[in-house]
Image (cartoon, rainbow, N blue to C red; front, side, top):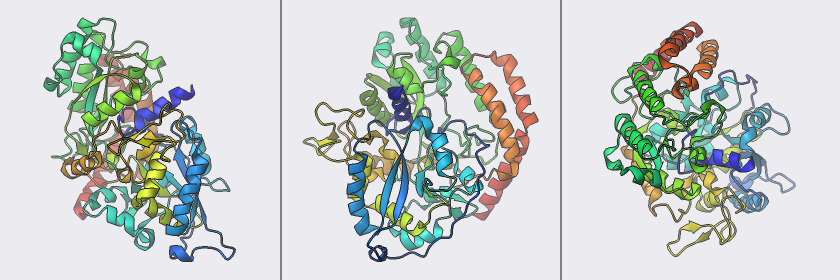
Length: 518
C-alpha cells in the first residue's frame, strides 16, 4: 500500500507526468473548512539582526509532501538551517505530510495551535480562493517588497505569471518556478504500438488517437488503452477551466474568446463524449473502472493498460521521465499545443499561513529557497553522495543500489519546492531542460484570462451543490459506465437545478471586471 501511495504521488508531482493531478487537483471540495484566523505581520528585519537575545533564531514550520523515502530529513534540515541562519536569519522545522493523509493533516495544521504550519505548498490540497475565503493565508505584497526581493527578481519578465496568484489585487501565494503551461498528450507502451505499426507523428488529436488505439486493440485484443478509474484520465489542457477542476464555467476557446460557457453543454464536451462512445464500443477502456482507484500512470506501470492520456509541459520530456520512473518503454505524442492558464501556473504554490507568528522570517526563508542554488539543490534533490551522485556530464543519478524508494529523500518531488530550475538535472533529462522550460514559458499560447482568479464566495452554495452533482455523474460518463445518451441530459438538468447558471454568470461578471481593469 505504501508503494502504491508513492506511485500515485509520483504520477502527479514529478517533472514527468501530471496525469491525475497537477492543475489536476482532485475534483475540489468546495465545502472546505471555513476556519477563520488572522495574524499581524511583524516588521521585517535584516537577517543579521533576527537572533533573539539568547542567540536563537525564529523557527519556521515548513510543510512538505512526502515522496518516497525521507529518512534523511533530519540531516537535510540541519544542512538547510546552516544556510538559512546566515542568509535568512531563521531556521526551519521540516514537517512531512503523507500524501494519503493530506487533507486530514492539512486541515489540522491550518487551524492554529502548536502544530500550525507557517509555510506550505497548496498542491492537491485546495484552491487559493478557498484558502483566502477560509482566512488560512495572508497577503504577501508588502512582505515581498521588504523581504522577497530575490523572488521578485526571479519573476522579472514573467510578472503576468506571478499575478496569477492575485485575488482582488492582492498576492496570496507564490508559484514555484517551473513550467507554467501544459499540453495534452498520450503515452503508450512500445510493445503494443509496434505490434500495430503505429506512426505517432501522424497522431495529434482525439480523432487520430482513436484510430490508432483501435488499430492497437485489433493487433492486441487483450490490451486496453484508456485507464478507467476513479482517478480521472482526462483533464482538458486546451481550455481554460479558470482554476476550477469541476469545470463549472470554462473558456473553451481561451486564446480567442472570453465567453464563459457551460462545459457540460459545450461542443467540446459533447465531442469528447462521442469519442468515449467509440472507446467503449471498441473495448479500449479497462474493465471495472469504478472499482479502480489507481492514477493513470500507476495503471500503466502495473500493466492494467498499455496506454493513457495525460498532460505535461513537454511531451518528450514527460515520456522519457515516465519511462525511467515507471520502467516501461514508451512512445508519446502531443494532442494539443502548450497553453498557459492561471490554473496551471498556480499548480505548485507557496503560502504563508495566517497562523505564522513571524511572517517576515517566513518570507526570508522563501526568498532563500527561490534564489539560492545550494538551498534549492538541497531541498529539491538531497545530499550528494547519499541521495544522488554525479555522472561524467555533471548530471544526477542514484547511487549504486539505490532507487527513488530508498535513497533517503524524495528527489522526484522537486517541483513541489520553490525553484527547481536552480537544481542539477537528472541523467535522463536534457542537459538544458530548465532553459527549455523558460523558453516554453515565454512561447506558450496564453489564455486571455491568464492572471484571473475567480472568487467563489458569492456562489459558494451553488459551487458546493454542483460539485456534488459532478461527483455523481462525471466519472461514470467518461468511463462509459453510464449510458451517455440517457444520462447526459439528467446530468445537465441536475447541474442547472444546483445553480450552474448562477456560477457561470458570476464568473463572467468577475472576468469582465478583471478584463476592464487591465
